[in-house]
Image 1: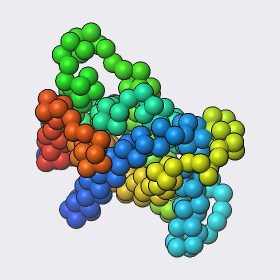
Image 2: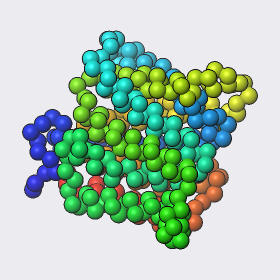
Image 3: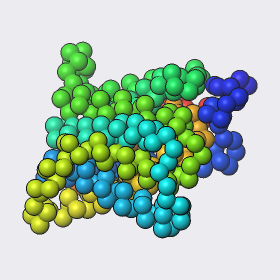
Length: 309
């Protein structure tokens, strides 16, 4: 059967068998952990601005990844060649994170999670432009089905809002970040030079910090940390350790073994996980029509996962 892409180049080949299964499991874990970032991020955003909050989490992430890279993995420290690669990736992630926290000041975690699920369709387009990856018709169908479910959630199952294109300010802000993340995923593969995964993650995080200094340095320096509620500290630790360090490694592992469209296809599970987590946290449950939209995105994912690359 014809593959999506030619196996002639390293950037275009995909894994088979056990390695492919591991990549799918990595992305399933990724989607569950990412869901937590929206819920915890929403709680933290109520007490701290997007700029200082994002800078704080990335400073902590650099420390965590530095310990893993140069302590646990014992990777020799040296400035990587073509440092501009990491500055580009860091800039894209900085925009994504800033817009996520800013959006959570205007809207709820479920809606931002729904916007996040538009990423795979965008990523498929950027993967074609950057890597020459062609998305199979069946996979594209799954992307479109899931995107329709995401739109249903974004507009809160309101047909009149869809017809009037009445989209919230928070969703529009985060959509900018989603575009940046959609570019980021295929660039991981394009910029890979067979570096150690821990070292690659460390330098991406380290090169994200300079982009965050302007919007966050003053606010972070003047923050009264003693007055911050415990949930902010919990959220920052979760975001820095779990949804930055751990999810980066999962994303890099999967992106080297699966097409970009399938990698981010697992983001379609994010709204479902957020709905579950928000309910457990006591923030209320969504209406059945909105839940139906989230389940539609999950069906789109199932279709893509079952189809060949």
